[in-house]
Image 1 (cartoon, rainbow, N blue to C red):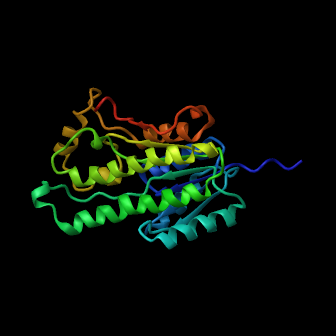
Image 2: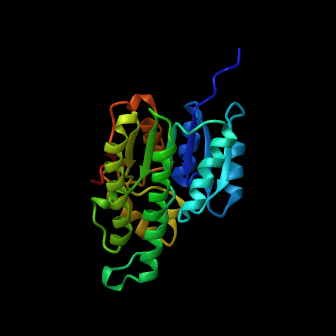
Image 3: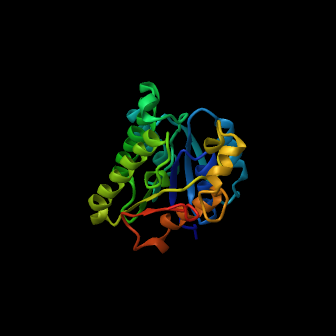
Length: 247
C-alpha cells in the first residue's frame, strides 16, 4: 500500500535564519517543504542537502515584491508537489540601517514597504486563495511593534501593518477552517539581526530580555511549527511573541 503523501508547507523566505530553522522543524514534523530564496541559491541547496531523505524539499527563487512572481511560485510548487500547501509561512523580509524619523531617507522607507508590507500582502493574498481548507498561515512580525526602539519606527510600522492583515484574514478565512496567526520575535541571532551591529549594540539588545541573551532561530521556529500543527487548533488571529520577556 502506498503511504499517504506528506502535507506540504510553503516557507517564503526559507533559506536562512528563522526561515531555514522553520523548514527544518516542519520537515521533522512530517511536512514536505517548498521554500523560497531571493538571490542565494547555494543557501537553499545546502539546506535541502541537510534534510533527511524521507522528506521532499524544493526551492524557488522569488522576489515577493512582484505579485506575478508570487502567483507563479505558488502554482509551480502545487504542480511540482502535486497538491496545495497545507501551511504557508510568510517570513520574507528586510531591514535597513535605523535612523530617527526626522532623518529617515525616503528610499529606505520605500524599500521596507515594498518588501515587508507589499511583499507580505502579495504572499498572504495568494496563500488565502490557495491554502488547503483546514490549513494554517503564519506570518512573521516583530516584538518591536510593541517595544519602541529609537530609529526602528519605519521597520516596526511595516510589521504592524502585517499584523493588521493577519487579524483581518483570520476573520475572513475562518469559514474554511484556516487558522491565521503571526509570530513576533524579539532580537534573534540571525544574519539580518547581526548586520551592521557592534558587539556593544548586541549586548544592549541582549540586556532588553530578563534572560540577558539573544534568542535563537530554532526557538522561534518551534513557535512557527506549533502554529502550523494540529496542536494549535484553537489558536487563531493571534500574535505570539517569543522574545524572552522583552515585552
